[in-house]
Length: 235
Length: 283
Image 1 (cartoon, rainbow over the protein chains, first blue to last red):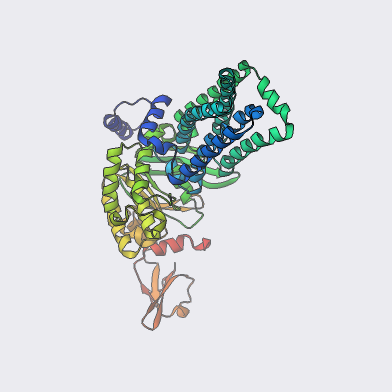
Image 2: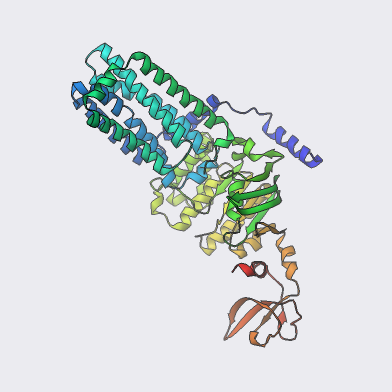
């Protein structure tokens, strides 16, 4: 190190102070504080319209579906609002070409995506509770449906961060939502009551295990996206 | 100080840049090169949008990739193809980017107002951006790059879409800003560079061809640039640079290694001459 480099480094430290790298939790907290609701509804009107549509359709399907299909409805419908809001926000970012600027800001697109998925996941649990509540026939049934729905939501959240968060492409954002809606509708149609019975027979242990594994994947991936600089640039 | 040490960038087997060494201290640096020379690649590496295939980019001795957020917090960037949310107003857009740049709400609001005033957009601050002209959008882009009061300001074709008056206003602004920061400006408009740049960086064949003050770069062609109204009479080997109309005659400006002073008037070379001469084989 030359003397001038050394002096520049000293000046830098004196100016900024001796800083330690922010933890993932600190970053997430700061991001939520700075962006607030804009974290979830980046562009505003468009995402809010899609969110309202998705929530309306979810409530309608969950409320009107026959009781004997309640497990399929819980698994198929619960993550739709989550997927629509998360992916419309991503798609708007991508289509509006704000990506390059956002990527050079203090909070990168990857970091916003990570925290957005976590927050939407948390909000999504309430939506799944609503769906389970509308479809359930008893308290025990409600808990079983809730677990299945949360497991489905966790799987989508994990897929969102592992796939869309890694390969930030517009087609992937749209594709993930389409695939889930397709599976949610297609499996009951193709497999009929066998699919419904399969879901109904899934034990609590399996559902809890799926929830825990997927939630762990989400948290692990989010921490990496929030703290490791090599994940910041994926242009 | 921002420094590039032996930077190489490859896309597959195609080398865009190789062994680039540069140092940026306070002042305006103009990146001048034809399309495809590697200007945008260099800018994207400086803004951490892409990573170099080899070498390091250092800010005060630290690798910018490892610095991460602390480097990005001192970085302002205006991309060539500036994207924006069409449904938002300039004010909302700047406040949103202020938040993403980790400014607290109060600071973001104050700076947004100040910058909108600085770029002359106060009157349309609450109009949707899809209703604004290209020049106005470009000024929103300049404002967003200044939101976090960056120490490194990187502007890719910043004067595109600005009218002559706005260009002068912008040049004055850049000159003022460069007093206490690094401004790296990529442009094709040579007149912008000549008036404001302290240093001109020219890239050729993936390497730095020149990195000097404009006057020093122009000196490379000293005594070799001529003007004549009868270019046909010049039998010496020469390179025609530009032509302009002077009344009814066409004045040709050319470069020649040979002494053509008997056939033409020797003139002071300018940056445009050097640009045309340096990239003569890439027309």
